Image (tube, rainbow, N blue to C red; front, top):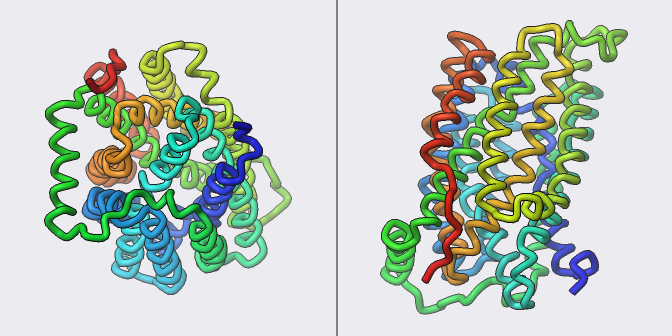
Length: 415
């Protein structure tokens, strides 16, 4: 099969493209800071989103496995759209809390589900060995969407000086994705048990979790390693926004524009566009990294170590005259994570039974969520008291300890 011409694989890519047209994402922290929130409040909002996701994570995965994966994805987009409306209208912390709750519900019903759809499609067509390549390719569509989204978002802020408007416009691509999901082949909904009641629903989840903690040792270790790594990435990745906001005067880029807000909108839009475009290329070629190291676990461990070095370098560069270097380091931070994610999914999915994929991938996501719930406000508090520089240094030192505790040493398949 030629995956470049396969219509369903193209649809999987288009899904990711439209999903990542979140025009607000490069400006979310700036939006909150402009309202008057502290870094601790911003971190708490991230935690609230992740707590909500955590509550719904495994139930949504079980729902997808038992009642339909396409249906689960459509529920997620409805929740997203309502949250965007509230972000647009809200002015106070409590309204943002409600918006984050709805966004978290959307995240829960989405996470793991679309990956399970992709892996099911590959199994049905006998090309499961191409998981890393196919997921990397579809992920690249997502990153191209994120790149275009950053440019459009920056243009909107530059023209209208309105951060709220970008939330409202983000509804359009999500409506398109809702429609796109309905065109997926029905068999990708999974084997729906129409007779499954509450008892069967709970038993299905309990059985998956029991297997994880009693049988699947390698899967458990992989989930912990993946959750902590991605958790730190999600907590730290958008601090590029306040870093550039604080150092905008030191950056000669577009110095003839007197408005700092307009300069920041262009700089952030441009930076995120480049970051996501290069990450898109990296995602398409992630499978080559696996070939270089031959063993999946070795490549994952090396990438983890490189990430620690990058985070430490970001800490060393903040509050210096090397503002452009910060952007380059964030670019490397995004790219290296983009390469690692498809390899990690290949490692994890190779251990999971097909019927439990959405559930197990949701458990992986749930562990990451728990980690973010704890770490996001702590990082925000450190940034408020000692500065963003110290926050990144703390993250780097913590990750060194975690690497020793979660180093992947085996790749055993379930017996």
